[in-house]
Amino acid sequence: MVIYLHGDLGVGKTTFVRALLHAMGYIGRVKSPTYTLLELYQAGGLHLCHFDLYRFHDADEWDDAGFRDEFDGRNVHLVEWPEKAQDLLPQADMEITIKILSTETMCNGRNIEVRAISQMGKECLETLQS
Ligand SMILES: Nc1ncnc2c1ncn2[C@@H]1O[C@H](COP(=O)(O)OP(=O)(O)OP(=O)(O)O)[C@@H](O)[C@H]1O
Ligand SMILES: [Mg+2]
Image 1 (cartoon, rainbow, N blue to C red):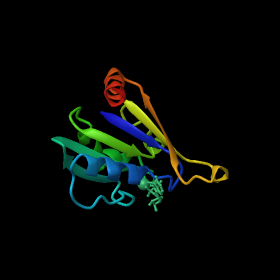
Image 2: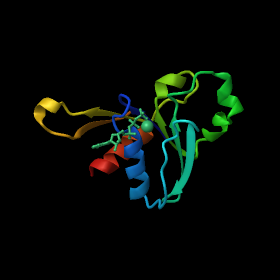
Image 3: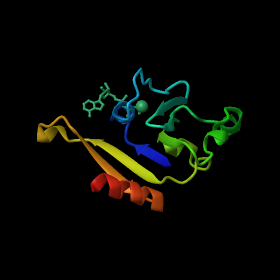
Image 4: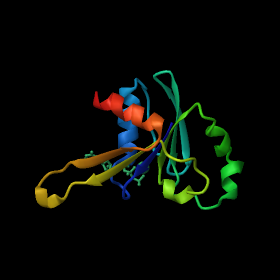
């Protein structure tokens, strides 16, 4: 399962992943992978890979860092800034777009749009909606 997380700098992508991991039972610190590019977790019987590709610039780095091996079809991948490695990443099963609600509405919240792309993504979204 590959999930792209879209949204401007500081919109709350890492915060969303942190909340998701904790909801799945992960106890411990969830750091932003700003500098490491990748942080690994185990929660709810799943292996989760949290990428932040904002600082990813060099395609050669992809294989050197062993990222190709991470996409073995078994892990769940949550990818911030997927635009930075467009040609290297597998297609997303789901895309999540976060936006800060306009301050004019005097509301401090976020709008989260979830889009299912693959069959697996659609099944996942249907489960969430049921
Ligand atoms: N839903 C929310 N409501 C209020 N504040 C939030 C919410 N989500 C995130 N924040 C705050 O916004 C700030 C930035 O959040 P976060 O680091 O998750 O953003 P990000 O999208 O991952 O940024 P980057 O693109 O730099 O990785 C943090 O201080 C966080 O506490
Ligand atoms: Mg982040």
